[in-house]
Every structure is written in structure tokens, then in C-alpha cells.
Length: 509
Image: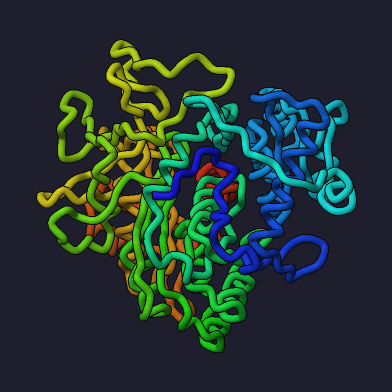
């Protein structure tokens, strides 16, 4: 196995450095092509420049930009210099961005021109383009050898249920992720990345492609037409995306029909639930591609599940069998060896902790909330806050998130469960379920539905289907048809926005 030591220094220099490492479809002009040698030199130039400015090991440097080549080069250079990279969600409000930069005590911010006004004036910033080019200090650089558990990056959580928290991840933790995922033949692929580089989904794939000596096709951000066109034009063979991105792609029927997608060999979906109908539609659109349903967390990395040790085929909606180097268990509140419960995990990718927060500690039994996301158990397992079930062969299936779960008349409802059921209807392309308040039941489910093109469907038919295929308490009391579903900054469903929409629709006369 390649002996990487610094997470920013993953380029294998014993291989052809003139190979195209990155086809950048963003920036001020596109497309732009960069070789491995050019990315390597740019990262070294960043590292030298930051140390010349007087930054010290452990100082934080933030990134606030759409996806582009300079973003990745700066990300690598920051870590090579022994500094800590802090990718920031540019979709956050300006006030939240300022909070993150101050919480991280960022000494410098790399940004693109549209995001420059979001940088607080008292924190130095360098804008990608001419200013970035002038900053670079060309020349060789020997990457800093990190100390054990030395932080490499801080990824801030979305903050949908509170103030964003900075997840501190060490060099060693994510070098383990890269080394565990490396396999022969990965260098033959072209990896399409459209998810934002402030998110683990995109960052993990970018580092894997770099270490594998493979080419990345990088979109500045996701749009379904641009995603499809990039596959056809650049013959992308490896896709990774959250399910809503794939669902939006599949709705572009005309563009899909006239685009050659035969290059796609592998699709990895993760970060959100996958329904049987979405999986079937994806297989129909990409019949030659292997499709994998995956799972990971920011706090404990993307390597959680894998193949079955006995070679059993992975069921379509399963996320796989526990990876041999990852310890997993399901906690139903009393039994930590249950067949369904909150996933708890321990692995080499586990975070150091949350920046500027007390060390994660076991939740108090007296609180009655022992399954919340974030704390560690007394024996060091991370409590994911995600509910899974396990079948007789040991395959795991995502059920829902504890922070999405609500109670209707004493019954626990996981929205993802109801959505998967509704999406089995032949006329439903996508479903989103959220709770609304109810004087009798406490809360009750309502649904937003996107119809399949050319299909007729009314609310009563949706309710009848739900009553016929699920417990009565799960059926949506109100059904609204929409053309699009709101997405959060990570391209997952924005459930808070859906709840606001539901309340507004219910109050209309």
C-alpha cells in the first residue's frame, strides 16, 4: 500500500505527471485542463506562500468558493504546510459564514469573486484569479510530517438544527480512508464531481481520484443538464451523488435520450435514502453501470460498509455488510445488539472531536435522548443518529434519521420509510414527507409529490395507495403536487423548507 503521510500530499510522483488530473468546468474560463504536475506545483506554491506569510502549524485557512481547480490545489497546499483546511458552505447566510470563520479563527480565506463580499473585512482573503496567482510562491516543497492525530481539516456540519459544528479530522484518519478505498484499475476511470467541495461526498472522491492517478471532471456546482452533458462530452465513467441529484438528472428525459451515457461504469449513491423506484429508473437509464447504495458520515468517514465476506450479492436497497475494520452495532435504546436501532460505530476515520466544543461524551440516561447524533458512548463508539435494520445475512438497510422521526398518535414515523413506500406507485417520481402539528395525534404526515412525466395522479389515489401498502398511521393526510423539491446546501432534501411550505398551504383558505 502506498505510504502516504500528509493528506495534502497524495499525488503519486512515480507516475506520469503529464497525465490530465483535472478538467475544470468552472472558473472564469472553461474548460481548463490541469496535469498532475501542474496541480502538484500549484499546491506546493500555496504551501510555500502560506508559510512565507508567517502562518504556523495548526493555523486554520478557509475555502469559500464554487468548485474549481484552485480550490483543490489550495486545499492540498494548506494541509501540506501543516495548516488546517476549513472548507465553508458558501450557501450559508453571510452571518453564518462569518460565525464559522470566527469560530475556526481563520487566518486567511481563499474565495472566488462572487463570494468575496461574504468574507469579514477583518479576516485577510485572497480571491481566486490574479490575486491567487500573485500569492503563489513557486518552487519545491517537502510536505510537513503530521504528528499523530494532527488536524488536517475541519468540516462544519450543515447546522439545520442549530449552530454549525466543526468536525475535526486528522491526517491519519482520512489517509486510512484513501488507502482503504484504493484498488487496482481505478486510474482508468474519469470521475465526475458536481457535489460541493465543502462536503465529504465530493472531497473524499477527489482525494481518492488523486491518489489513484485518475482524471476528475469538476463541475462548479450541480445542475442536471450540465451533469448529463459532462458525462457525454468527457466520457465520465464514475459518478457519485446524493439521490436527489440523480432523481433530478433522470427527469431530463429528452437530454438523456440524445446523450451517449455508455461510458458510465459505476454509480455510488449516498448521504440520503435511496428508493426502489429511483434505483430501478437509474438502472434503466444506465443499464451497463454497476450501482451501489452507500453510507457514510462526516464524523466517522465514508468507509462503513462493503462486500459480504461470503460473497453474497448485496440486496439492492442495502448499504452493504460492515467493513472488516469498522466496528458497528445497532442500539434500540436498551439492546446494543438489536436487529434495528441507532447505528453506533468505531473506526480509524473517527473524528478528533468538535472544534471549540467540549469533548463528545456519553449521553445522560436521564435525558431520555440517548440516541441523538454526535456524542460518543463510554467505550468510544460514535452515535450516528441514523436508524438501520440488519437482515439475517448481516446486510444493513437505512431506515431513517432520529432527528427526522416524529410521533403520530403514539407511533414512530420515519419520513424516509413513507417516501420509499409512496415512490413504489407507478406514477410517483419523487416523494417527500414531513410532519405537521395535529391537535389529536400530536403530529401527522403530509406529502409533496412529483409526478412522473405524462402520468395523471390525484391526492386521493396517493392516500389510497398508502393505506393499502403501509400502516394507516403512515398515510399522508394532505398531498400536494409540485414540480420541484427544495434542496439544502448539501443537495439533500430541505425538510425545514418543506415544513414551512406545508404550514403555508394548510393556512391558505
